[in-house]
Length: 76
Image 1 (cartoon, helix red, strand yellow):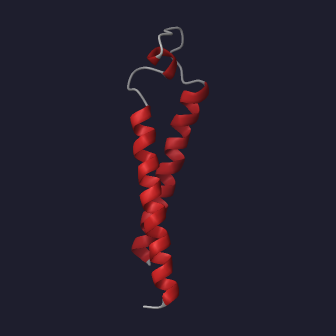
Image 2 (cartoon, rainbow, N blue to C red):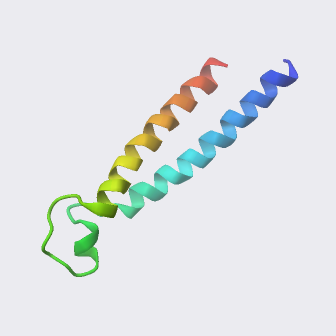
């Protein structure tokens, strides 16, 4: 193995660990069946808005990056 190959594996492994921690955190923040507003007492909104919508979209982005990094680490 070359030094570049080993360094690339280490970088992908660290990226995978960071992405997995972010993904777990984002999933845990989401509350099934309720929005962020209902968590703090407001029951007026039943659609994803504001912070909840941003977290929902960010979860898909992080998931895509996690899958991409995982596939790259298998390919290398």
